[in-house]
Amino acid sequence: MRFIDGLVGEAVIVGPAWNSFQATIEGLVGLLVAQGRVPLPIADVAVRTICERERFASTAMVDIGVSIPHARVEGVDGIVAALAVSPRSVYEVADGLPITIVALVLSSPDLSGEHLNFLASLSILLQSDLMRRRLREARDVGEVLRLVRESDPVRSQS
Image (cartoon, rainbow, N blue to C red; front, side):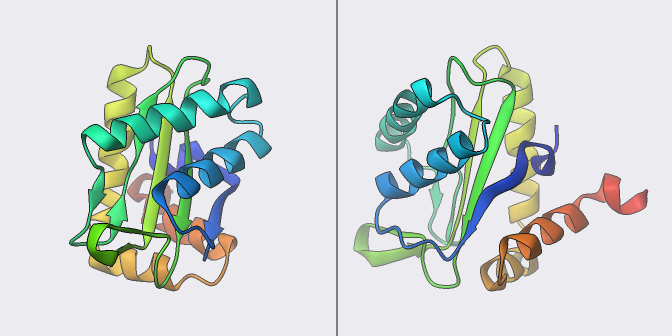
């Protein structure tokens, strides 16, 4: 499964006004709930699972301003993703270092291999300096989705 397949509709936010990792995760999970991709009864569990995991092993890549918080959570159907981008900062890590792109990934616990493949697809997308710059500069959700779709080599060839 490619990143664009898990990223749908309004599960993208440009220039959010969050100021912490926890607020970012709550906001992104909220987007997934609003889209019907995560059931409301498991939203708190998803937020708590992601935040606990982050305390033990950060997913922030400070050198490139990207974070990919992820977890497998009971009650999630398949693999779902939400994305937040900002030209300045979605949230800051210790020492005030900005994280400008956050890609949240949740998946069903029985999808271990698929979960890892999805994360690999996302990692490839965000390895590009040009893609990160374009995402940070995106003016709206439509532009973000277009950039992600155009980066998909399978879809670009069809």
